[in-house]
Amino acid sequence: MTAAKCISTASAVLTRRFPPGLSRMGFAAVFFLAGGLGTPAFAQSPPAIAGDAVRGAKLYEARCEACHSIDHSRIGPSHRGVVGRASAAVKDFTYTPALKKLKVTWTPANLDRWLASPPKMAKGTSMGINVPVAKDRTDIIAYLATQTDPTAAAAKPAAPATPTKK
Ligand code: HEC
Image (cartoon, rainbow, N blue to C red):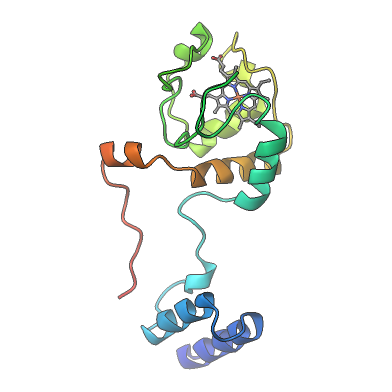
């Protein structure tokens, strides 16, 4: 199919899905007008994190908030900015020696390992629950990734640039 045909088909699909006037439509229209090289804008997911953050938020509330909150340390440490953060880095939380000596960065992959089994990763940790279903872990991690810490971002080297369409 030609590029022009492809674009008009995609536009037609979008028009059907999103009534004109929705900002999403506007965004897509700008993208298509701009030349439409590469992946269509609407098919891009947030950088590097798979999973359904909306579902993850509900799971977080149900499975994590007994002990954690995003902004306050409780039974467990606060979670703002945890994706990409060093382990055992929350200042107002007293970690177990097991977690202190873990010394990992909480990448999505490490969080997945952690949630699958905290004691497997840090024997002696006081976090006594796990999330056995992989999809649940992925969605929770996707949610956590949306809870960024603006102060940490300022201190870190700039994140890799998200491709900008000109
Ligand atoms: C029963 C209480 C409890 C529940 C429920 C719980 N946690 Fe924890 N969590 C803890 C405790 C306590 C720690 C600190 C462990 C230590 O110091 O060994 C911790 C630590 C963590 C850490 C390490 C943070 C850091 O700063 O290094 C992450 C990540 C984490 N929890 C994620 C979660 C997620 C996501 C959920 C929900 C699926 C969850 N926890 C549910 C008690 C809990």
